[in-house]
Image 1 (cartoon, helix red, strand yellow):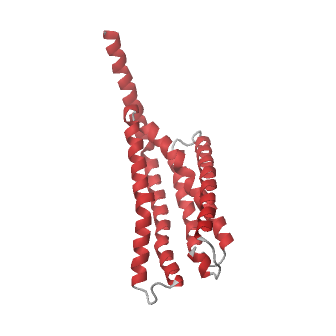
Image 2: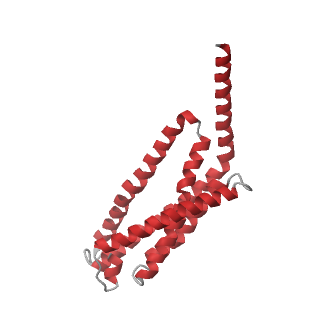
Image 3: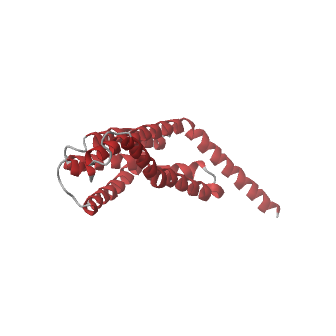
Length: 207
């Protein structure tokens, strides 16, 4: 909304939210489908395909996020396109992360692992990130020369939102680190399941 006002146009907040919501939903559906299918195909040639696809999605979305923030005051249509592309790449990992959890965690702990992953992602994402962005923006604006002006508020939000690019690259780095340990963790979970089934089978036979 601020970027549109800086360009000299007036747009209702509800209209901007609606467009952003539609783009986000479309990007989410497309990103999940592309990510899942890409990982499925690459697993045939690379057992570490899952975290590598996730890393690619996060790292490649960072330039789009940067362009969205840097060019926001120039062309709204181009920004919507860049947001769609960036969010599509960002959503590549949604389904894959669940797959990774399911095959590196033994069955009786999967529900706890899934619950913890969902809790942590929402705590750091949906709940924590808006507050952090707002706090950074407010801090920059308090130290600015013209606090409260639309242009200055926009610039302060720009500075704050640049942190999302850093976080995307950082997340990609963590997925690359995951790729180093994935096979060992998966083999360990499979071994624990075989041992558990073997013990269960022996107990049943003894009875």
